[in-house]
Amino acid sequence: MSHVQDGLVTLATDHPIWDRFFTVFPLVLIGTREADGSYDLAPKHMAMPMSWDNFFGFVCTPKHGTYKNIEREQVFTVSYPRPTQVVLTSIAAGPRCGDGSKPNLMALHTIPAREVDGEFVRDGSLFLECRLHKIIDGFSGNSLITGRVVAAHVPEDALRESERDDSELFHDSPLLAYLHPGRFATIRESLAFPFPAGFKR
Image (cartoon, rainbow, N blue to C red; front, side, top):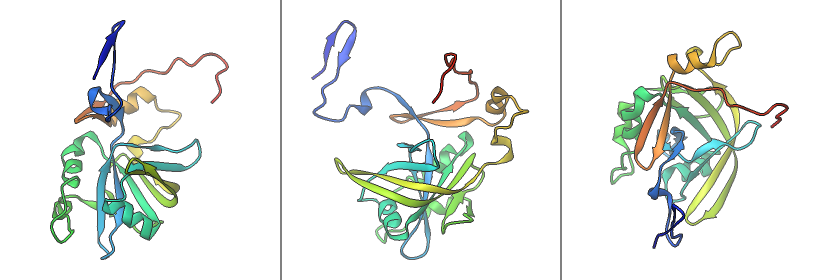
């Protein structure tokens, strides 16, 4: 039961709190190889770099094919779709058929990875190829899957360069943000963060 004091609503934590407010996430498609040799692409939003070095991780559940495929194959790919690919990304979230197949994936145009056995969704804004680093189980039925990035590919129009203004880059190549629960946004504008003088990460 919620409690209000000083304008703050204190949420009960005997069940998940995350649907009571909006939070901002990326939206990625994790690519894996199935046991039959075909490829799967699954949307995930609890995903991010795992350090300042080349590690990437995302939350999954051992019940999903994505977890089983990565555990078996030891590799995965990450595609960052653009705002124009929201519908295609949603299609990838469709349920499997009784035989375990996902015919909806036929609607997705893919390109092969170069360093690992996997595929990307074509026309995305960033592509990562990862080898499994570590799986950490035990988050109430969920797991954190982490990988070392062994190859990264960025389309020219999405690449930061010293002679190009960052605000222009956002305008010309907007980013897709997932607003949990159940909404998305197109990021076309940004401002430089006001770091204090002498700040170091």
